[in-house]
Image (cartoon, rainbow, N blue to C red; front, side, top):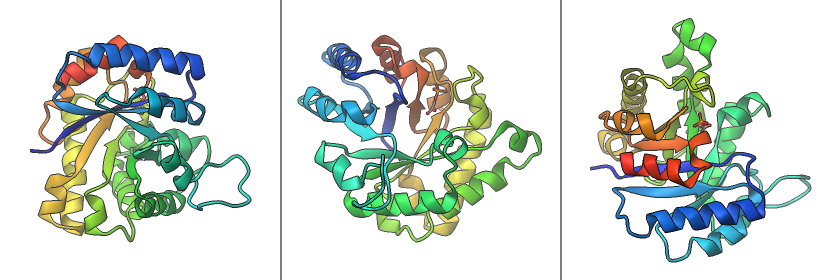
Length: 251
Ligand code: PGA
């Protein structure tokens, strides 16, 4: 049985005070619960250090939303894997579609980041997903295959046990349009088959594949109950403790 993982991607939301408030609220809601899933929050860089103190003693784990592939140097505005480790991060989101489309990140760049994260002891939440026009053209599988294989180029079978893939159809992110459970399951199964062919059945069976794109308390349960959907990467609905909690309960 694969463990379900619910992760909240806060994106560029919540200053330090707002972050503290949200974490305290979430901790309170989780106090008397024994969720059937792991819970990860990914606040902005400026809140990570405080977040790692606040989550102590709770089941919440910490992730960042991005990082650079070098350890240090003249890279103005960037943050490295050792820096994220030093503030208590265990996970890092890499290859999010907003990084790909707004900031021009390529499969090759994302691959360098994934390899650096793994060698530094961070667990990547590696995002893939097609644009609306790519789905309409019928090229969803080709796009996802390219992103998965290029992103994982040179990643060992052993390191695959530390990595999560998040399938996030770009047309479903922040739009309120969720993929139907059947549409999502189809791509998740495709990704798992791809991993089986390129690694092994064992690696494929152990891999956590999250769905992301307008996940809410109302649709989480049905999505996550699909055979190959092992949790969710949540944007908008993780910014309120009660709706994030609704998704955790759905899992
Ligand atoms: P959303 O974002 O839940 O707001 O659609 C998901 C994501 O971008 O990870």
